Length: 213
Image (tube, rainbow, N blue to C red; front, side, top):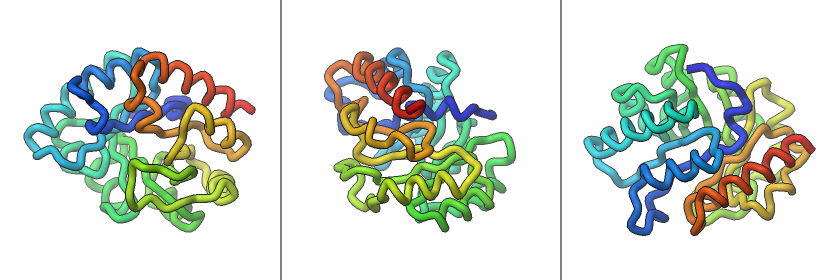
């Protein structure tokens, strides 16, 4: 699946920590109804059988909304259920190896914290970069902080789209204006909100303004 950098405007990363009795399918559908433009399934605890089943359902849902759907880290699951692509971190499988396994028509996103990592990821076949954490975050224990200067330097050093991730909220999104990013990736700013549809709509509006500023 090829994608447009506009698809990266509001990139939602799932987290079952916030489900509160609902299904992941329900909350992802609400985020799509609110205008999320990209979905990443991030699972750390599920066994492969349930992960695969869940991934297939979410892929069908995202296809209805014509929104790209990628799997975090698990390249084998992504291949098994024909996801649109994967997102890998610096400690996961190397980008060139991921590309070799997935083939040329799948999306590969790579997390980067430095200009060097960003340039290398692009050279090895990444389609976009997720850079962060740009603000302090509670979602990832090991998140490296990335200054807004570094974020801007990464955007200037590569030709592929860059999104910011980490601690982003509807209130601090405007601070990212002028960095060169084409969108943001969030978890709790969407999935921890009492009204996911409304929260997603507002976040999308603010992000659109920030990107165009």
